[in-house]
Amino acid sequence: MRSMTGYGRINKNIGDYGYNLEIKSLNSKSLNLNVIISPIFSPLEINIQNFIKKHFQRGRINIYIDIKLLKSDDVIDIDLGLAKAYYNALNVLANELHLSGEVNLEILLKFKDILKVSLTDEKIAQIWCGLEKVLEEATNIVINFQEEEGKNLEKVIVEYLKEMKRIVDEISQHADKMKDTYRELINNNLNSLLTDFTNIDEKRMEMEITLLSERSDITEEIDRLNSHIKRFKNLLESSEPSIGQDLDFICQEMHREFNTIASKSKLLEITNLSLEGRSLVNKIREQVQNVH
Image (cartoon, rainbow, N blue to C red; front, top):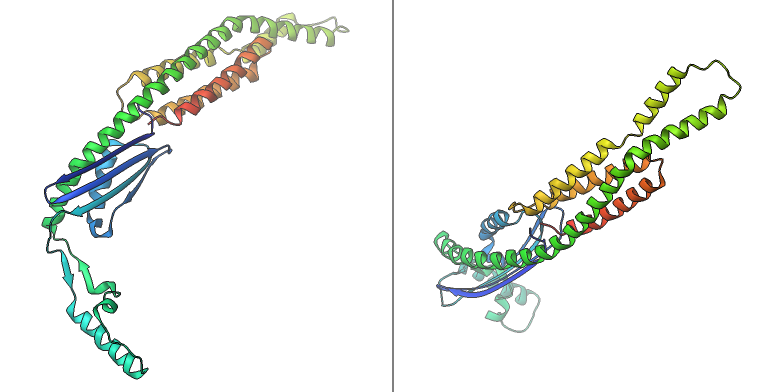
């Protein structure tokens, strides 16, 4: 099991390029990628996103990438035609407005579109070859971080599950008693209402009592809770790369079962246990929010 919290950083030179890469992962209900990279290397963004999606299914993943050229390379295109056009236009402007000073290189360089960085497909492929290796290393660091955090989360959740199983078992022990209590309550209420009547169909009354008692039966809810706990444990022990959403769904279902038990309960013991169970589910869910 992995948490969604992780961090990894790599600074490495490969071939003619230097790579400085940092990955931070935080909690999120779904996968949310944020890639920060120079616009020069924007053609690599799709490759980066596809790579990350193979390793992360949940979390807010922030990726910072800085790529440097380690040696001089012919990647700058100069738009001489545009530079001359700017130069001529500025001279005309200076003459018309009777401005002093000359149009020099410093002024021309303020027009960013004169100098353009141009990377060929071949260079992009070379840069990606090195970047992919660095991404792999940084991703492994993050995943190892998440797995260590996941171990701590699992210990806490397992203890909560043990406590929940105890609660469910105690509710089960009180379940048969609740049927008898419900029957006794109905009998007492009916007797107080029917004291002035002599002709009472006892069989019909018994049938009504049985029907009402069946409505208070919580056997199915107990069975489902036990099933949810078992499923939860199986997911914790599985090798699935992402189980957080499934665990969260099971928490919702367990909370619903405890609510149903509380609404049916006529015993204070069961009501209190169901409330304790709901509180425990909330604690588990707080931990599950950080499970990848």
